[in-house]
Amino acid sequence: MKIERDSLKRMTIGVLCGGLSREREVSLRTGEGVHQALVDGGYRAVLIDAGRDLPRQLADNSVDVAFIALHGRFGEDGTVQGLLEMLGVPYTGSGVLASALAIDKVATKKMLLYHELPTPGFLVLRRGEERTAVLEQCRHFPLVVKPSREGSTLGISIVRGAEELEEALDEALGLDDTVLIEDCIEGMEVTVSILDGEALPIIQIVPKGGFYDYHAKYTAGQTRYIVPAPLPAAVYRRLQEVSVETCRVLGVRGAARVDFMVREKEFYILEVNTIPGMTPTSLLPKAARQAGIDYRELVVRMLLDAGLDK
Image (cartoon, rainbow, N blue to C red; front, side, top):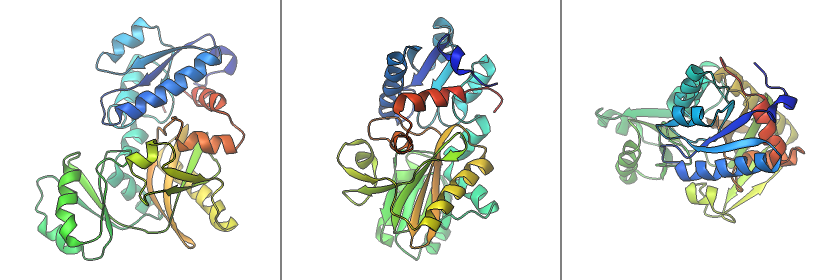
């Protein structure tokens, strides 16, 4: 099913935000931005805080199509997508399987390896497992320790020595049952936004503190963004091609973002974001603007791709 542009203004658009995850505050900011853009454009939009009463809210507001502005669990992981499928409400972004797969960093990396796409080497530790064997394999530092299913760099640590590793594992396991221990690739951090299967201009991310953490992501002035990223033409083109291919093999659709570390002519996929932020500091709107797509048009294009049975 494809929504026609002419029919969109006759629909009630439910902007789903907030929710139950640790990324609730960021999601509220994303939702407010999207909602305001739609209202300013003359669309009939309603802002919905997606709690456990979401089915009732959708029915009470006679929602025809859902713009999912949720980040993290219970929104970006396939759960809300499955609910909307059951209710027959078309929604933006990826479907159930792709959403569940992409939010799980370990599962994503296994898919990338299967398809021979570049990603840093890694180990996995699950809650309750004996740590000794894993710790013995962690001989080369720095490493990055992260929960498998959290976003916005929540629970992530850069570990530069064995004495820091146990604490980093405890922190990550406090947020998820599965922890990813990944080789730390030091180089240029870049991101490639995808819209409707096409790569947008690449952005280089230069955080003032050296680490693109939660504070650097969502605090104005804490990160410098260079767009288009200053890369050799061949590397630039290849990053865009690999980003499109990554989304294809994971089944990701609509708007998405693929994050990389680049070291000279080599690059490594870090993760895939199926619901990129739409806040004033977010990367997808910056890339779209560089491509000549303003914020409101970006929102509308995401809605035009909404559907079911993805």
